[in-house]
Length: 629
Image (cartoon, rainbow, N blue to C red):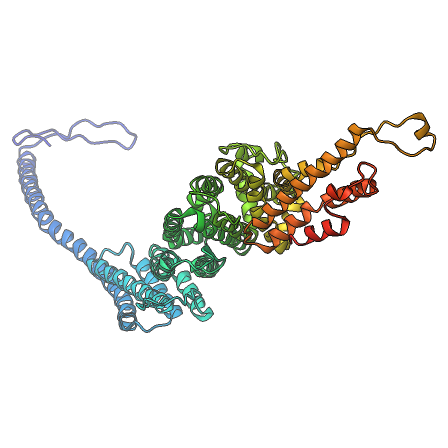
């Protein structure tokens, strides 16, 4: 656009594309053209003003429209949010209905376990659906549902606890010894269902609750029996404990019953191996401690008088061993080893073997004197009382002796060496018959110990070995009588060297008693008579004067010795008729010797006055000997 006042000369285009020369200008046309240009210029100014105003108006309109457009978008978003919220509220309302439906059912606490499970499943499903919900109220509903689930689990746990308590009643009666640990099958089934419920909800309390309630029930009942086993006075026969009469058997049976029954029930109630093992160990952990404490208390009672109470120890050990065997057969995995709990008691039992032998030595050596009537000593009666009781525990005694080592280890460790017998084992008995042989050796050692010490005591009291042998024989006969009266003891001694050792004892003691009688019998030994050739060829026998004097002296010595021995024998105040009869039979060995000597010399070859030397004929001598019984 040309500036105002500047007038361009118009040019005209030609049809052939050329440019024509400007038209000729006239004053009138120039004025008209000037006027037209002026108008056009004015119009351009107006249009430019209008455009400026229009631009300003556009800016205003744009400023006005922008807020309206933003609000529209906001309202659109709000609408969407409202729709979403309404949808969430509808979902929340539906799950709130689930909560409102389940809450009164659960809080009543009388649902079946399967119904509790169904309610918890519905609540958990609702909680899962509400996860991620932006509504705070959803979180509140979720919290309340979780609390309701906790209530449901608590209800089942409380029912589980009450059922266990009902099946495990604790009686306050002091004399309650009837202990039946088994839970009825119906209750076991219900408990198992509840444990299944806990496995999918909360297993943390199932095992502890069971172990606590059942453990207290078992311990309460066992404590009553334990007290009885420890405090009840031991029943005795002739001063010794009588097998099977203590209350320990009731206690041992109850412990065994509890361990077997609990494992059987726990395996029915719980399914997981870890839960089974935890329940077993937790339930019975105090039983092991109590069992050890009870055995220690019994051991203390026994040690007060081991000599008479040791048989109580053997009995308890035997019962523990039997129960241990039953436990291994009846259970898959015993919680603890019964026999390992009695180590101290077992040691006391093993020590009792040495205590017995030493007791014999102390008693015999401490006697003021041996009985003048050769009565059986009280210690001998006590020893036979021991042996009579020992036969009740042959297997147990063998099990206690064998671990001590070869018999020579414990038998030769005593304070004496047997002077009667060389039959004491120096090695290990035949393994096929070890129990019987080692028991035979022990019983023989007791007999040796007794008789050796009696001999030693008698030697301090008597100068002549005759009375020493008599004291030993008096007690030996009592021992042998007791052995014969017991087929079992006799069989045990026969299985080893016991009978042989008793025979050696008898021979030694008898040799001492018969010392004077052997001297008497020595006078009946023949003399050698030297004959002449003519006598040897068939002539009449002729004794030298020296030979005749020898025969006369033998008869005189025999008569004197025999009369003295018979008189002494009759002076003996035998308290035992069997002892008198036995000794009378033994001294009768002189009869056949005398008869032979008498028959040989009764014809008077050695003297014309035989009546001066031959005091007794065969019948008279036998009659005197028979009168000694």
